[in-house]
Amino acid sequence: MRPFTFHPGPRLLAGPDQAESLAAKLPSGPCLLVTDQELVRLGLTDPYQRAISTGREVIVFDAVEADPSKETLLAATATGRSAGVTSVVGFGGGSPMDVAKLTAYLLGSGDQLDDIWGVGLATSQRLPLVLVPTTAGTGSEATPISVITCEGGVKLAVNSAPLIADWAVLDATLTLGLPKPVTAATGIDAIVHAVEAYTSARLKNPLSDALAREALRLLSSNLLAAIEQPRNLDARSAMLLGAHLAGLAFSNAPVAGVHALAYPLGGLHHLPHGLTNALMLRHVLGHNLEAARDHYAELAEIIDPECAGQGSQLRSALLIERLDRLAQDSGLALRLRDHGIAFEEAAVLAREAMKQTRLLVNNPCEISESDAQRLYEAAW
Image 1 (cartoon, one colour):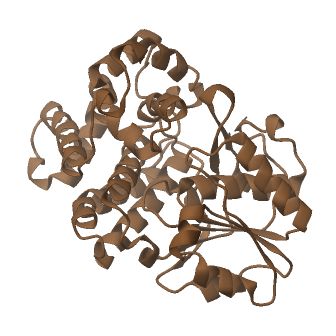
Image 2 (tube, rainbow, N blue to C red; image 1 turned 120 degrees about the vertical axis):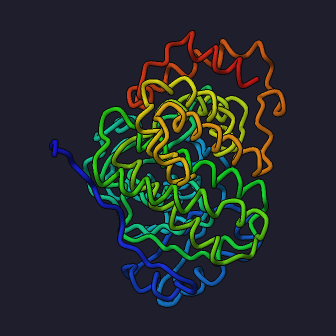
């Protein structure tokens, strides 16, 4: 066995009706609840807000948008600082959880945001932090990563161990009834996490491999049921667990080319993150095919056990075909043109993708700027 390092994620509270259990994990003093306006409007935050407010004040920051901006993060931090909060709860999809993680860190550490972009630069102590995902996709509740959209639509990230939450709540009832497009996009996002963690060029290891494989099994076998039967609790529970396991996998074996090419689509066109991954999935995996052939072949057997024993070239191609079919069957529109992106933008998108060096370095093979432009053109 070659040497490796593995960082476990947060402690878990799993199952329905975890609001009281969550509240018991928080210290006394005011708590900042970071979420978005739609979740507040739908009443999903109500039981958690009531439970947390027993014995402490709850300050709700619900201004988080998709692909949250640096300004939003700083506003959440200012809100928490002015209220003197002693803990932070992130409630929602990846955007509220990413904001909550960095808010808790900035409040607890006193560090300046521009000093900690990158890997391993946030080394101080944060406030106590609990994360509650309401989608089965980003896995943000499991990771030490927070991605923020900065000037010019460029996505920057902080990736440091202190951002790992103390606790995460996996309550699948919070995901019941999610709209089909959201279920599809977040589910594909989680599948990409599992696949890219399994093929990560630098930090792939036996534990991340095991998590990625189980995540792919859960996600690929339950995504369509969760889309077609929005209140199927078994399917929703499997998706939530699969997304969490994929999050643990890619927080140790980082994601790569699909995400690198997806980020400019989200930053410049404000498309949902899971959708942008789906748009580039087939094309980047095809580019990687020869370099990642053996790993793709191993993953193919999870999705289609009957292909076991066939050659690695056939199995690896089968994986790409099956994942593309799954994305199509999920109902997502999978061409850039379907989302108002012009063919002529490929060069600009490729130039922006080259800024994602922290991701590109993990890809099984090099993606040059000319490669990226070709892949965007193929996705058009």
